Image 1 (cartoon, rainbow, N blue to C red):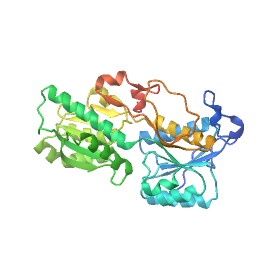
Image 2: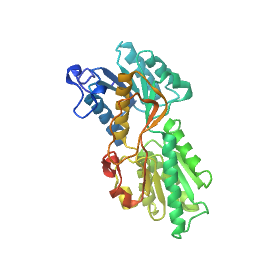
Image 3: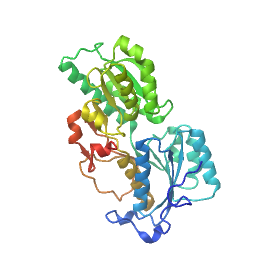
Image 4: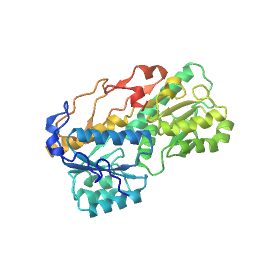
Length: 361
């Protein structure tokens, strides 16, 4: 149940206190060899793999030791891991908490907060759990949903201007969200709904999905309905789920990029579908940027022992901005720029990373 990352004992940087931060990083953020323990989902996708690798590397570069404990997207398993870990008596300088379920994980964060500051990531903090979380760093999934929804609105506007015949005045859409009960699924759908409320699509079907296999199976199961009523648009929680749906559509004679326009909430399995036009667009939510920001936020808090009120929206810039050394805010949010159309694949850049790198090649 406990998965360590680093040396055999689960720690990395055995003599971290004498190593100092990596050249080029702010010396004010020196972790002095302190331990940061990370609870997160297991690396079952390229996004998770890149995220875990980056957060560990960035913390080590800032002279922290790390321990990673992963779960199979299972709140009960994660709660048990927390209890097992606390029973060891180990006292890290901070916890990074990526919950399997924000709502179900409140009691675990309460227990962890009695030992060390808890920095939550990737899934929004619930009102019930707010008092146990020191700060949040990562994606704002409501904003993500708004950005992907706006991309799809733009695509429909272009389609209508080009004379494309839709299957309904609004355009028929099928919604492929993430897992039921996952806070990111809830928030991302809310953002999409909010931004399209005044000019909605005609939703003809929806499904909950965890991965590409689910996307394929659910698209296949819905195919009779999609073919009988006609489908113009598909919105997906992420690229992995969309890839499964694309495979099913192609096998059933519906051509992505021609018969149906596809937009997803985050790319992580490659930029080819956007370059080819199979997918119209995505939100450039980078696992590498998010993980780096989480690590930096931990170091910023531990060096200042302060949290400023409100949100800290990090800028969307082509080149990487300097790492702040000031106290972090209650929410430190990564940039979420849109990627629209095949031509953008060759030109877009975020924090020095090109689209192929942002989308895990």
